Length: 340
Image (cartoon, rainbow, N blue to C red; front, side, top):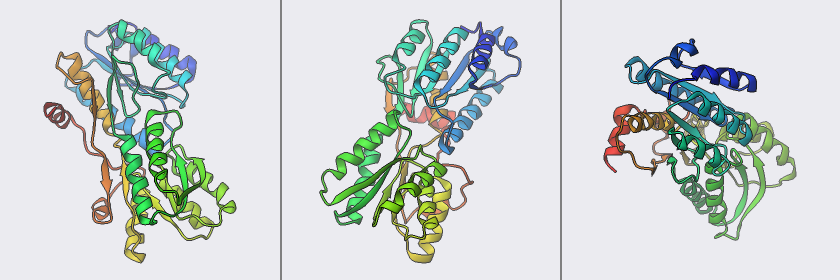
């Protein structure tokens, strides 16, 4: 399973894809008898995804230093299904032992995943999972995220108000599920109107630009629901000289820092609910234990992290550009699996 790791470097370089590997000598790792675990990350364009890749690398480096894997490979895509499929095909040709996938689509990768599984490669999908019946699926209840934040907005607005819906990374399973939860919940409140829907790509700058483009056409906005990039929503209203409405967060440091200050100055109140980028570490350790012969459930959802006005001050020291996340180290991961 280890032969051909050098091949993937050449193929991915030809594709112009972002690539990282635990060693600089690809040929040396190809000759090793140890395990090689890859990460296929469909998108690298926001802080959540960057932190997620960093978490994966940290865990992989720990396992490599302990001699439990020979090497690891990280491949970042551009958000498109075709790019990720090409990258996965290259990883399959390289003969890796397992691939952890944050998928561009719940269905488009299934054929390629089937090829990997038939060749004995373990496939672990996480965060944005796939529908292939034999792929491991570790995610979050994104539909529940959507219903939670939409219900909060509806209750705060007493069932009536104008809302901007900022979509996330379109086509990904989390985005689809969370948006479905939002739409289904708002449908129960005829007085809640989605007056604009924009693409934010879970990125503050993209979110700010998208909202800035529609604000001049909107007389009144009572709330903004996002799937990340929420501080960009705040900045858009500030730049327009307009009162900042109820903005629901997704656990980004910049938004939480602004929220803490706004709470102290004016009593601003909201909630923030989000997934943890460190789920990539969970996927890595699960993959390693699967390869080592341990029994791991095929599917599971990890808990969401919810921040409220009562708890937001606990996150005052977050590093800029980060997202609230627990440390899914090996011990923590195995404790969760042991409870199932």
